[in-house]
Each structure stands twice: as C-alpha cells, then as structure tokens.
Image (cartoon, rainbow, N blue to C red; front, side, top):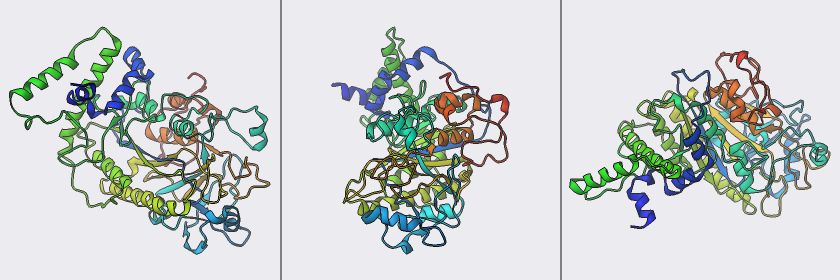
Length: 505
C-alpha cells in the first residue's frame, strides 16, 4: 500500500491529504499541540448563532466595472470621467447600468466621495436588488494597508510602510486573508477568530471554520484550522470523503479494518509530529461521523440556487447552516472561492460571464438565509487579490491596489457605499499612484474585519489578536465602530474592554 492509499483508507482524506499534511507541518498546528493558549471573549457565554461567509474572487476582480459612477449632469460627471478614462473597458451605454437607488457614499478620513450617483454592472440584477432593499453594501477603495497613506506624497516618501508585493497575486491573496501585509504571515483572520471563539461550539471535534475551497490561509489559526468539505451536500451525504466502502462496509473485514484504524489513531506517541498526526487523523474521523449524522436532518428548501460552481458552494453552505443545531454550532465561518478574474485580456466578455454568476449566487444565498430564519445572523462578504487598473492595456486591465468589495446580510446597514469612491481620472488625483490608474486604498482590510469581528462577538480587548495592525487605524470606544457598516441592534460594548494597544501582538 502506498502512502496516498494509506491516507485515504485510514479516513484522513475527510480533511484532504494536502490539508492534513499542511496542518501537521504548519507552525499553527505545532503551537496548538504545545501551548493550548486561550483567548477570551466576553461573548463566549452567548447562546445566539452567527456566521460569516467569505467569498474569495480569486485573481483580482475588476471592481470598477462592478460599481460604476453614473452621474451625467448637475455637477456630477461621474460617468463621463469613467467612460473617458476606461475607454474600451467602459460600459458603452449608461442606460444599461443598473441604477442604485439614492446610494449614500459615506466618505472616509475627511475625503468626500467624488460622485453622487452609482450603478452596478448590467448583469448584476441580484446585487442591485439586494442593495436597493438595504441588504447589501459596498466598501469602496478598500485594500491592504499597514498604516494609513493619505496621498501620493506619503506613498512616495518612503516614510510610511507599504504592503509587500502590492501587485503580486501570491502576496496579496495571502494578505487579504491575514490582514498583516508587512509580513508573509501564516495565520489568517478567521483562524484567529476561531482561536477566540471555537469553544462556543458544543462539539470540539467540529472546527468553527468550514472550507469549500480546500486548504486556505484565511481559516488557519494558532489552534484552529479549516475543515474541508465539497459542495456535494445532501440528506444522504455531507460532501466528505470518509473511510472508503469495503464490501458494503459489512462483515469481519470491515470490523477488523475499523478496529485497526481506531487503535492506530488512539495511541499515545512520544514524537510530537507523530502525536499531532494521530490527533488530526482521529479528529477527521470523529468529525466525519458527526457531519454524516447531521446530514440526515437537512431539510428540503424552496430556494433555488443557480447551477454554477459558486451557486453550488453557497447552496452547500446553506445546508450546513440548516443543521447547525445538530452540529452544536453557535459560531461558524465559511470560505468559498470563485476564480478566473485575472483578465489581462477579454475583460468585457469575461465580466459579462462571471459577474452574473456572483450576483445570482449571492441573491439565492441571501434568500436561503431568510427561508432558514437566520438572515440577520449571517454576514457574507467578498475579498479579492487586488483591484485592477482603470485604464485599458488594449485588451483588459492589469494589477492595481484599492478596489470595491461587497458585504451582504440582514444585519448590514445596506444601501450605502462605505469608504471613498475615488475620482476616475489620472491627473490631479491624490489617490492615484500610476499613469495606469491605480488607487491607494482609503479603507484598510483591518477596518472591515474589525467591524465584522465586533458584530461576530469578539471583545474589543481581543481585537488586536485578530488584527495586529488595527491600532494604526482604529481605537475602540463605546458606540464608535470602524465603518458603521453593521447593525448592532442597539447593543453597546463596554468601554472597560477597550484595547490599550495593538502592539502586544
């Protein structure tokens, strides 16, 4: 039997071979086995359910054709500037852009928004409807930052720290997941959240972090990592590859095999790596059994999901949420990937194909959370490697920095654009650092994640563990939130828990 077959037949493939070996050799797994460090939250006794769903648009989405200025008169010349600068990339007929009703653009750090009227790509009817119904918001010109950069002069001075590899896929896709852009950090935002709050869930065998995108940095913490499933979730299947069937799983052969596996993973090993491997394998088998039993209780749902890969993934997320009580889950974070956005050419056709997939899947998922009665308990948000240049390379757009992301859910103060939408011009623009049109972010990933973390139940005293750079952008005080993005339903977090400094971590 070769190594791969051994891993599969021992049941470890429920996590996936790559996930298992990455977990074993990562610093987080070793630290978790050795230290058992605990991080508290004043919300850990809460009995409510909350979930975050991260949708990674891998490749760097051209988000300035997703959210578009539409003003053509009365002092608002947004569409004219957009069309002139984007040239062949622009939506040619402004009448086809789907209007957002009275979109309040909040402005940020004393930088007012340049335009008053906005719309979304002509194919994004679901997103248009969610926004206009107050269930979705945009965060404009958001990106990775170590500390605030006010303008081009600060960027060029060399006196401010900037993220590593601003235009690098590998760096930026990692930094969006870690929110520590000055280093190639192995721990992700959801992983740190899991370190804090995973104990809220009744079944320690089930990770708070569930991935439909395989091994990822976002969900890797010091003591917590992702549990990977596929989107093949039904009442008879949870989308995991468990112990393979052997003659219909019946008879003495199966009993001997099961006993052998249980004996192997139950041993106590002197070698730390061996013991961690054994614990991980046993945890995978135990988790699979719990998921398999819970899957039998997945209800039929009226909501129809599109048959795209993203639609199937979000449908699976909804099904897992539907049996959250059977899994003993009070807190869950899901990770989903939808790629193909690195459009250096064929951009117009590519966006016409891919943006409606995102829009339709998000709308169906929100409708499913309404059907399940948890719309105000689930917040979904998009991330991407980076934005793209606002000028054309002749065929598409290239790597840039700050762009536009979406946040959706019943607790989102929707119908607004948070942050500062930049002027779509190249000259006399303090945010533009390139002749191609490349914007310094006005909102950091830390600020978005901090707002989500507070809503999720993290104490302000623990924010700096989740977001080590947060002190460069935000200091908590009662009823003062990073963006004002989330509805906290009138609850105020005590100022006693206010963090003194984020330099501790």
